[in-house]
Length: 315
Length: 276
Ligand SMILES: Nc1ncnc2c1ncn2[C@@H]1O[C@H](COP(=O)(O)OP(=O)(O)OP(=O)(O)O)[C@@H](O)[C@H]1O
Ligand SMILES: [Mg+2]
Image 1 (cartoon, rainbow over the protein chains, first blue to last red):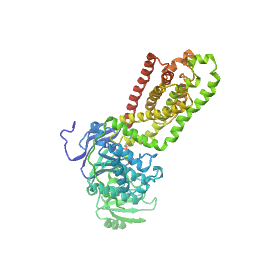
Image 2: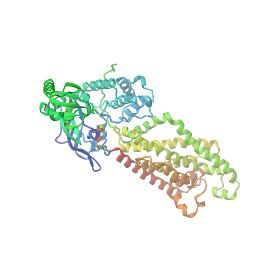
Image 3: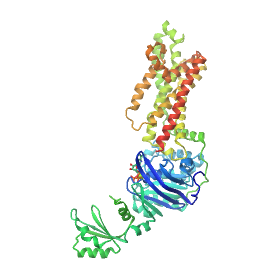
């Protein structure tokens, strides 16, 4: 294997100083990644952070501009087709063939992997069942809802029994029930030994699914770890949320800043990061704060994200 | 609610070049299978109408003229026209298949993006797409051949060679146009311009209806660069049995050269656009 000398390991994806340039703009600015066999690896980050650009390089459809990259132990520039044959890719934007039926979308796609007709037929039936679209198999694609199309895209990505799946915002646009169905499916794939790389804007999704994740911002990785590690490292145990009537929140951050490790002001509320939320709330009341509502909760990835990128994901 | 647990198959090797190209053709065929009626109707109906209007209508006017007989080499105008229309129809079908559908597959349907996420490479996809267009031209040419046989405009088996030449001519044009279409980011007016300023003049001034020697001397070089003129000379010569070896070699050489250039440009353009 050319170029692989010295980096033989269990990691399915290994990137060192990976970069992607579009003209003079650099979307990915030198990142290191290791994805281990059997894990669910997440990319978090605000819009434009470079998540999709990175995933497209891993998917061997977008050549890297600089740095080292190995996927399944091979170099995408050399062995792109071999690697792609073992990947399952769910792009951010669906690209199903809108002029084919549901079933034909799977059949046609499977054939590109060199599968026999019989194998494709059997696998497609299995997958339609897996994503609960069997009763829609012969419908034209236009008749599917957005969430059904997303499920079909995921079924399609599984047609070749991939070892590694790349899912770019797989549940965006799905209703809560469909999301949970999908999480269940992804979890089952993981149990069967498939390695998953997921990008998402949903913190609950990342917490539920990911063993390990990186937070990207501006083309760089700004933090890396398991959801619990990240919360422990970048946030406090609890968070106190104070809501004020519009226009009344000004001034309070200064008054309260010494009560918490950190105070974050959002458009509609104030977040106080502290080990003990209730104690902080009592102290705030003693200083004359009169919020319209209060909430003490545990820290989540949302808070880590806010801290690292200065941006809230829930708008 | 619960589907069966998924099974995992053995690794299979990546398809070799031509096998991959054939899979692309198969994918395009799957689409066509559901939508063939409109395609067949348009690619047969159009030359059929031309055949009736010019070959029979117009032909009945001039078949008695001595000057016309001189130009057609003494055969009925319908017989003279039919093989040329075979080439025209190939070029027109090629123009339709190589313009909007190509841009759409990049931009709106985005099917090319889906294909190149599989082991299929952009270059294989490009060749598969062109191969598919060639098959379409063979099919519609065959249908047209049946029609002119019914009209009694076929003189002998030479028309089969005319069929091959017409397809070659259509592909020489198609490959260049596919490369052009693959380079378009927006629909803009590019395709309208192509149809108006390339396809239409080419149809009128490539010796289909009258020999280009009848054209003003200054515009004759335009016919020489037109693939349709070379295709028409070949198709008509083959059908009427008047083809000369040296001329044939020249026409063939030109069309093959255009085809080779077009295929290379198409492969290159697909690779550029699909690996950003
Ligand atoms: N083909 C392209 N040409 C030029 N710029 C691009 C291209 N693709 C992406 N970019 C730019 O690269 C940057 C990163 O884009 P990318 O799609 O990787 O972000 P992302 O993290 O996936 O964002 P989102 O959460 O919105 O999907 C953006 O500024 C984007 O405009
Ligand atoms: Mg993205």
